[in-house]
Length: 129
Image (tube, rainbow, N blue to C red; front, side, top):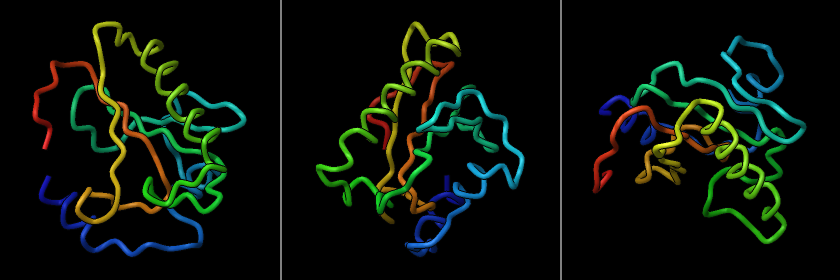
């Protein structure tokens, strides 16, 4: 976790392309588990629980972080959560899962392109932080 915290504190919000845009463009390989016209979901390369999937909107539309969401982003946000539900079912997470959206440096966000972490495959603990 220390590495993620350090990455988040060092990350600079950018308006241009992010690593997620490169993944969406298939310019670097990823293990895609779900894709439709609006979202792409792939396995995290450094999973925390047994199942750790990143779900990203294909069009950023200024949505670099959750706190930047506007009313015009309601559909995008809904698409992300619905995709998380579809992927959770596909991954066999009937007994439960967790959805995480990191926001800003203190929220441990290291890529400024809104994304959802779908976590599961083991018992989650509370509180999460």
